[in-house]
Length: 110
Length: 128
Image (cartoon, rainbow over all chains, first blue to last red; front, top):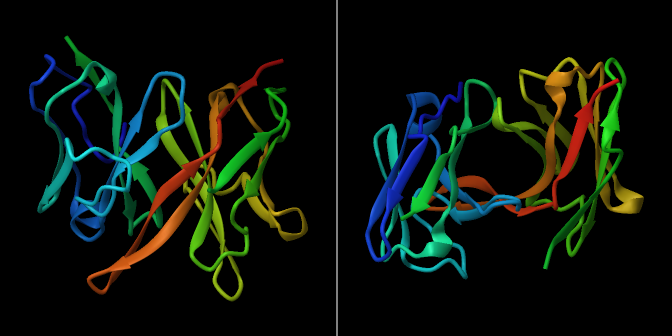
């Protein structure tokens, strides 16, 4: 069981906006930055959002991150078929002195 | 551009040691702004960070609580790579193993890291 909680699945139709949530306790989300990773089938994860809401170069501005207290969200607007992937949140856990991941959310584009 | 190339056996017998290597190109294992991590992924455990090594005037290691008694991550500066050794493996250690570099950045007076580059991943099966 992951210490960061994500919904196991999400879905949307092309062009729609979808959000994926990530929640946890104060020791990791409240005190530290949260990052989002996208994993396409058969590939390694790739950073999508870092520092709660920063996009690395090359990531489309359709992807955005936000945080409020101990919860965070990834929003994808203008959904495309190529967005179908697994999405993971991650944060440093001060109490464990290690990285923790959410259980992942499988996004289906209908 | 940083590239990470993993190597190592895909099959390990129970109770033996799992050993993987991650070769770095485009950066140095002795970098003062990067950390070098091992992460694994399995259907039962999801993504699981195992540990890291990094250099900040001297070498440091951090390990996940779940594997702390069995894991060693070593940098090998002449070869510019780092390695993972996981002892006394069981079938529960069967997973896809990734090496990953995390970039340290600072903004607004706070510093953090994120996993910027990943190896290609390698399925390691623990079975007799």
